[in-house]
Length: 599
Image (cartoon, rainbow, N blue to C red; front, side, top):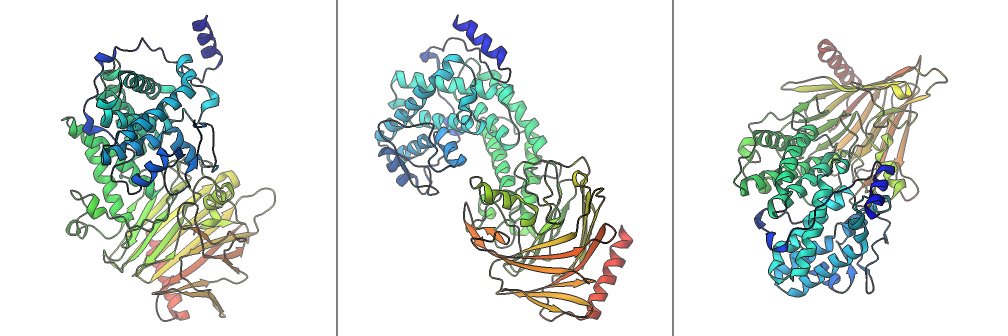
């Protein structure tokens, strides 16, 4: 009867996943091996491991300093979400507490940490044992059987066994093995397989299970995870070596996942596949270009602002991250298939740096930031991306994803949404790099809203950017009224000063080390708005880290449409002296000559 019920459940809910598990293997047949390939979600070197582990011993759910420890009574309430945070519930369901306790045991060899870890795993198992009995992926436990949670839970429990097997009773060890075997079947099931870095995490956990425990399925699991890895990395990293996850942070994270895989091959004395080495080289090279001279990334996509510098010279000692090798590279690079361009005038600490993005290869961690750019010079961010605030505050998340939170162009504040593009509607159309100047042109055909956007950037030396922005529409009913050109200013800028001349309009602001001026040619009946963000004004807000706001400034230049089209001719200057009208005309002529002849 129970079997019949299971079959009926599987037929009715076709999206559920059923696992046909044989009887558990005899404990004496199972061996935990290859401990040196264990991926520890919490390292013994983690700076807060002592503090957090002691909180957990005292019946507090603690994961990091992002949230205060949350107390519980005799038992954990596994369905709680006290901070209304998907990240917090993810850490809970991935049993990150077990990772902390295992790491602290490594530091202290105090068996009390192992005992607490086993207690937590048993509590978790007792709460969700029906999932094992039915062998069905249930709708009501989505946070439990989320791809990210399952993969990391398998790693945390494996970490526990790897450091404490000699202290575990046969009963405890059998339970942990049974839990991991079930997790292996879940990770192996095609219906649970996802995409992006989550799919890679699934494969990493499944491969580790196959190589550390001699389950009956281990050989098949290794073959499957190994093949999946190759397919997934080749899908998720372009031929130019760029992750399609639209974020500097996640590019580096995907690289770290690749390096984990490489280390596994090496520690198992397996030949590292050529495709791994090729992708590694390309991804590291992109990081070289992406990293600013102050050790920070541009905040494209879901990239948090971080106070700590990224010391890639220390982390990637055996790679392209050596000064002599970097200085041999061209200073600038364009990745036309991936949708990025980075221009710098030198590899020095005071270099001028511009990063441009226009890509639609995926929507994963993507913001509505096409045709946007950031500008860094003399150690200061002058024009910035608003960055990533987190996922919990829906209102803030919506703003930080929006087009108007980026240094780009739109019409009537329209949100140019990702996932609405057809093939070839977002492109880097043209580019070239010369000794004294470079240019790039990108376009967005947002047919969903009948609007076309085109931005051309001519970079002259280290002090002049000439922007030619064109916006047109084919709106059948009604019209867009204004085209918008938006710039987020970096921190430490003063309030811009507006100066209007007969021939042009200029907005000037000062930073600690730079002067920044925006010259608008042919601005005519255009208008200017300066947004100074605060608790009531979101325009101009930047991320200062996870759920931390920095109140900055934003400029918006707007021009009315004439015959369903308009354009901006904008010169951005960091020259100490003001530009004369004659100089502006010379730059415009230079643009027309150097760019238009190369179209």
